[in-house]
Image (tube, rainbow, N blue to C red):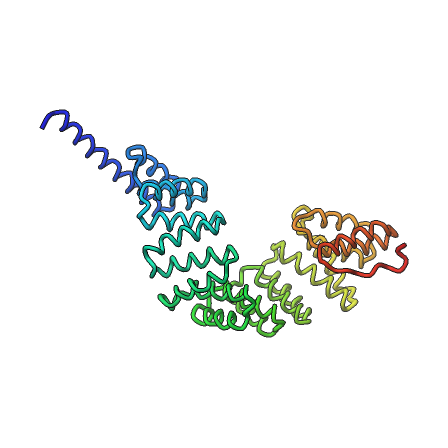
Length: 372
């Protein structure tokens, strides 16, 4: 063996050893939840071997974990190009494009993998998810059903099947499937949320409230659970129970802005329906606690309604001006503003606000008789 060959072999072995060590360091960094450090190690490995499919694949996965999806897409695409027959790069490319909401591309990559492994339930689920997200529900359902045939306890796939059936307005089938999910996995909250939405669509307030009760019990610290139950009570014409739900929730979480806003909204609704001056005063107190610079359009709209009912149309007009300038805008803000403008005898402005409300809600409301 010549000295030159010996040096070449030694150098190659040294580079190979260093490459493998950098890959191992990157893998350990991933295990330690340090994606940025992993990227550094994988980049070092690529500096030694720029044709390594594995290094590009791993660095792409690290970029995906870090949230840099464009870099993840670049590296994973290169990995596919370096070894088109490998299955994992196609799956990862599907995952990245799915997160980028490039659903048709994700479908294509998952399908390529399925051509090699047709009995992978997790891949079938991902393909079904990509198709559901792209609106191709009819083609999503068969692959999700196949995933469930292979893995009957795959509750995430069963949940996705329920969502697809909802999109086809097959509410009876969907509710049956989702109830199966909640029976097998009582703590899987998305299935209960979907069931609550189905019962709301069907006008079944009793079953809707049951699901909201379960959501509150399972996720008590989340203010939105209490708000969801309160709104369900309101839809069931039990506004007083909704009000009580929010009062108790606020006692447990007194600094929650969204609870304060929603409680104030319920106070004003209660005051309007029952002609309750105490509730109106409580609404004003609650609304004066909110930060106007961060309050939602909906909260500001109901603040404006409270002021209108309290007889302060001038301040109401100012608050409603904030409401209609905040995104996403609450359509009812324009309707309330039209009533305020009428109180201030600004008939032209009242008509403009009413027209904007009608455009946003596709509804027609009667104009006042004295609006010439």
